[in-house]
Image (cartoon, rainbow over the protein chains, first blue to last red):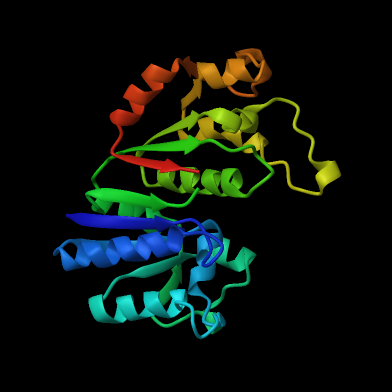
Length: 119
Length: 121
C-alpha cells in the first residue's frame, strides 16, 4: 500500500513524530511505500538541524534524516508554517525539503491512505 | 492532475487558542485550487470558528473569520455542523456567519465514511 503521512506536532513535546516514525519504519519493513511525509503546524520543528537532545535520548530529527537517506522517503516541510516558526533552508536537517501545501494535497490524491499524526 | 478525491476537513478546535484552525483554512483553500471535492465539518469547539461577531483586537491576533465567508468564491459550499456540538454550546444556526448544513452526529459519521481523505485539525 502507498501511504502519505502528515505530522502536525513538534518533536519531544508530543508523541506524534515518534509514532509517525515508528509507523513509517514498520510499513517499510512490511514492503509498503511511503509516498511522502508532510510536516505541518508545529510539525515543521522536526526539520531543524539545530536540535540537540541529551546524549541518552533519541535524536528525532537525525532519525528522520536517516530514514530519508536509507529509504528515499520524501520529507516535505510546509513553507508558510516553517517561516512562521523560523525554519529555513539554512537550518534544515539533511533529507528535508521546504515546499508548499500543494505537496500535502498531492499526497492525499496519490496515496492509498493519508495518515495524520497529531492532536 | 485528473484524479478527484473527496477531501473532508474536520475542525474541532476553537479559533484562537491554537493555530490549527487558521492553518487548516490554508489547506482548505489550496485543496480547492487543486479542483478536489472539498467539504468542511465543524464539531466540538470547532463550532466557535464560525461564530458571528468575532473581535480579536484585545488578544492582538488576526481575525480570520471573514475567510469563511469567502469560501463560497472558491466553490467550497459544503459546510457541515454537528447538531449536538451546536446545542451543547447553546448556539443555533443564526449565531453562525455562514450558511451551513446541520447534521446529527450519526449522519456526520456516515458522511465521514464516504470520504477518500479526512484531515482533522
